Image 1 (spheres, rainbow, N blue to C red):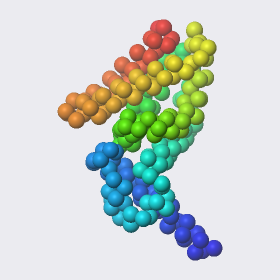
Image 2 (image 1 turned 45 degrees about the vertical axis):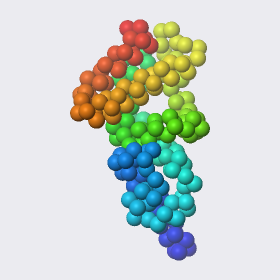
Image 3 (image 1 turned 120 degrees about the vertical axis):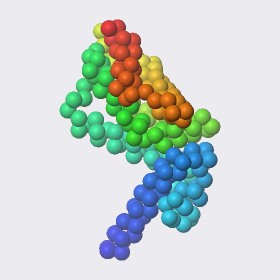
Image 4 (image 1 turned 60 degrees about the horizontal axis):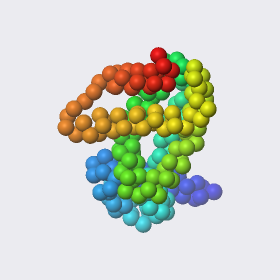
Amino acid sequence: MVQTGSRQEKAAGTEAALKQAARQVFAERGYLNTKITDVTAAAGRATGSFYNHFASKEELLESLLTDMLATADEAVLGDATHSADFSERSSIRWHVATFWRFYQAHLPEMVALKQAAMVDPAVGLRLQQIMNDDRAHMVEHFSHLPDAPADPTPHISAMNALLEGFAYQWLVVNAADGRTIPDEEAIELLTDLLHHGFAGS
């Protein structure tokens, strides 16, 4: 029993080390330029150990995404200030601020996800499927609007595209040239755009 537990703990430690190393190497070299050997070297593990946990670099990225979403879900459930009523500006602002900070905290993974989806539509589809369950809870948020859409799917898509595109532009592209936008300014701008667009106020 002790040996089994020890092996399980060692395997869990290796998996965690590989994930942390991937974040580091993605940040330094970009997802597309990262090789599996880069990840294992950064993790201080043998290359063969990678395949005991992941079949490919894409599967590692999918696992990172699953972890990120699980952590985000826990944060939402534990925050008493969260509201699902998008007719209220404060509710939209909470979601915008949460996304903005989530993107900042997971910048290497967010950029990797974008790159992976662009070069391989099949990977993009799998990543989209992983996120679908997380996005399903957003349906209720739109039911409180004055003119609640029968199918909020396009609204959810538009919101995500705006948030992701704006975050990528300012936190990745412009940041490379030293251009920045204060967090509060970004959050307020996005909140106003979404609140006016959805609630008409």
